[in-house]
Image 1: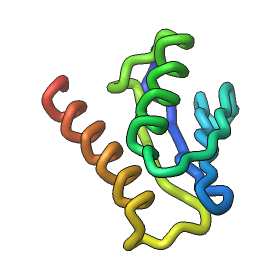
Image 2 (image 1 turned 180 degrees about the horizontal axis):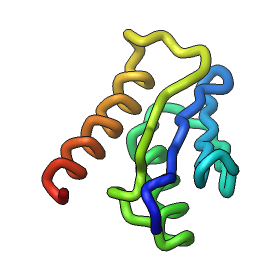
Image 3 (image 1 turned 30 degrees about the vertical axis):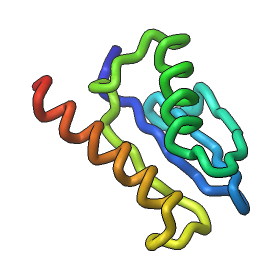
Image 4 (image 1 turned 90 degrees about the horizontal axis):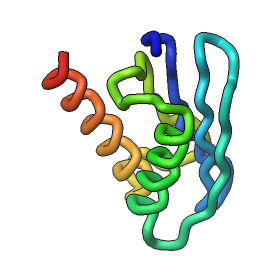
Amino acid sequence: MDNLLSLTIRFTGFKQVRLEFLRGEEPFEAVDFSFDSNLDTVLIESIDKVLKKNRITITSFREVRILGEVDQNSSAYRIAQTWIEAVKTFKNIEN
């Protein structure tokens, strides 16, 4: 798998998230979900399911970003940002 993959974690509404996976500029998968208090678990499980289904490794991402209307001081934003930082750390170890 080439390194042209990107993931957008888009906050689409109150306690609603859309994961948008792109290969180059072309979308190839989108997952919508709602969360109550367990965003960390739901986010990780949703991403893992798409990666496994499409046989993608975490190191294949060239970009992971957060978009949408979300307060950067909120727990939801910080959870998503922590996952992104974990991916960056993992890529540095693996490369």
